[in-house]
Structure formats: structure tokens, C-alpha cells
Length: 336
Image (cartoon, rainbow, N blue to C red):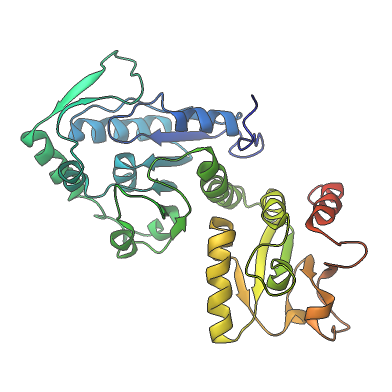
């Protein structure tokens, strides 16, 4: 049966190399690798099986980066720890296990272990003893060594699942990097969390690398709520956001009142997630927004200024009664 979450984006990362760094007891044949190759069919996904000994693993990754010059590195869990240390490249650290030695002790990851996915060398199990745990502790102490180097702050994203019960290193990451984002998901990614949380970040990185400027859509927060003041998304709102961010730069416009702004930002973080990160604008003057489109409810916006700098989409009008009609309209525009 066709997976309802997975969708291909041939234009993203096209002709580029993605290095994937797997987590503890995983391999280069994991489900995440399959997702990457499916979603980005025109990218080359490199996914090595990491040696058990961490210094050997890091040396392998350093040499691979030198030889392959990846355009993007993505690491999950233990792989996120290694990924942070691969300075000079665009990187995404997903639920990074920066204190992997502590994690091993806290979650019974010592003694005989089995790999979750098959390895090319055929090895199915390995043993974690105290000397090996010490090796991991020493390697993790080298994290953040060059976080202050020029350009690094803009080249590293940290993504942290709100239901991750295995590692919790967001506060540690925040001490060294500014691009930290929470997402709805567990420690191990599934198709849903990958598509709705990781892919948007990859799109941002690919846009920056390509110097790609997408048309801008502003969305008034009042269009997202059900009528009557219920704190729930308007029908098909989330579907529309997932559709629009594929072709447009989407920003959410919220009230500028300090108390109301905080409530709306929290609401967007809950129901929109990663696409709302750093894409929220608080202003009482929508007429000053410069872009391509503004989606708002006329009844909520009050008297509209004559010289608006955007094209107005009157949400709730006869033409755009629902988000399905908004989707249909922008489908016809094809990203224009």
C-alpha cells in the first residue's frame, strides 16, 4: 500500500551529496536512509556502516567528508554527536546523543548488543564493555570544540523531539548553537516526523545553497483557528501549510500584544511545528508587510489600507471559503 506520508521532491538537493550518519546499533541500511533516497531521488545519499570504536568512526567520517565533500550531513542520535564535530559543512543533528556514554549506562546499552539493521560486513552483534564506554565518553568530550568558528552558527541545526525519552540534549546544544528547533516526535524518526520536521529544514538549506528566493505568503493567525474561538486548527489548515511551503516562503502574522503574541507562538509551535520556526511576524500594521500574498479574514483585519504591498486572499469569502479552495488556487499558480 502506498505510504500516505512519503512524497518525492526531485528538485530538492538535486545533483548533491547527502552524508547520513546513523545512530548507535544501527547501520547505513536503516529506514532513514531509505527515506532520504526515496524523498530526494536526484541526490546521492552516502551512508557508511560506522565502526564500533568511536575514534575509528570519526576518522572514517573525516576521510569520507574530505573525499566526497558532501553538501549536507544529517546525523541521528549518536550520529548527531559525530555530525556536530564535522565542521565546515551544512549539518542537521537530530536528537543528538552528545552524552552517549551516560545514555548507554542509563538505558542498558552495555553488554551484548544486536544491530537494528543489517550491516554490509555481516556482523549482527557486538559487545559494549567499560573500556568502550570510556572511549565514547572521551569522544563526546570533544563536541563543540569549534562551534565558535566563523560561519558555524548558520551551518548547524539541532532538532529535538518532544517525546524523546532516550536523550535530552537541547539545553546543551543551546549553549553552543542558536539554531535549535523542537518537533513533535520520538527519539527514532518515523515517516511523519521526517516529512514534516526534517524535510522543511533540508528545504531551507537547499534554498540557501542555491540562492533561491521563493515568493512570500503571509498568513494571518486568525485564519488558522476555527470560528468561535476554539483553539484548534481550521479544517485543512495543516494540509495547506504542508502544500504551500513546498513552493513558497510562508510567514505567520500574529498580534503584537505581548501576552497574545506568546499564546499564538505556542499555538503555532504545537500545530504547525518546524515550518513556523523563525517564520512568525508580530505586527499591528499588515499594510507594511512587503511580499506577494497575504491570507487574512476581512472581518478580522478591520479597515484595509488602500496601498497594500501584497495581494490579498480574503479567507472566508465566497472565493476562498476553505483551505481546500486556497490550495486549489495556489495549485493553479504553480509557485508563482
